[in-house]
Image (cartoon, rainbow, N blue to C red; front, side, top):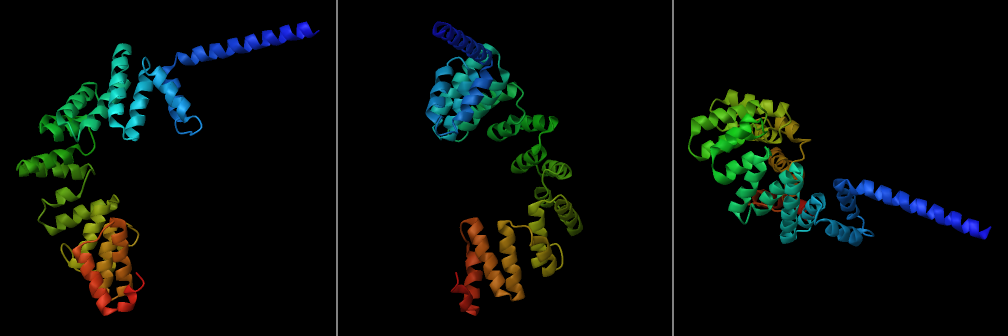
Length: 306
């Protein structure tokens, strides 16, 4: 009986091994799935070392693993290693005609070189653009100063392309052309504020700001509120300014609220908002410190709490 039991156990073990091997072969045919699984395991401290070792061991012929290691080392700020693995991913992807990995690797290399080697950055972004990565057009426009890239971005409907081209034209003193594309940027809801600078008529300025507010644009809200405080486009109306700013929670909104409550004589609320601005901004400025000094001179007991 024991002999039969042992043979049965052995056959069962062999069947299980065969099943595991078949499953492994099936998974091995999907390089992306393996690399993705190992990359996910890198987040697990108990599996980290083993997963990193396995990713490295298969990266010589697995473009997904090489790319994932590039991403991992970029995240770890080990840039030389990141570049090495992105380049390795490109080598393998070329052999397997994997355009997806080529696009991502070229683009990421362009980003890695953007601050310290402009020529290499341009080279890799051009490679990505040749493979149809449309988001490279605006970057290449900025890096090369070649306006054809902006036009290509506009032609492909890339968001912010009208605004970027308008700023390029303005920088090159082509003001009327710049205004034309700033208007298009406004009409496409890319931006509201740049176009505002071209307008001299207060009613048109107000129209642009109200459109921005309708589309929940924070800068439009801040500028209109500032106008209600200082009477720039609109008459002064501090209550309307508060109504715009009260739920905004941007750092500039706290500065503006500080100004409003100072004008209203509510020094406690004014001081609270100026300090909130300092906290959110990570620093102060001369205007804020001047307001705070004035508040402390007028009502010293408020400042003892900060």
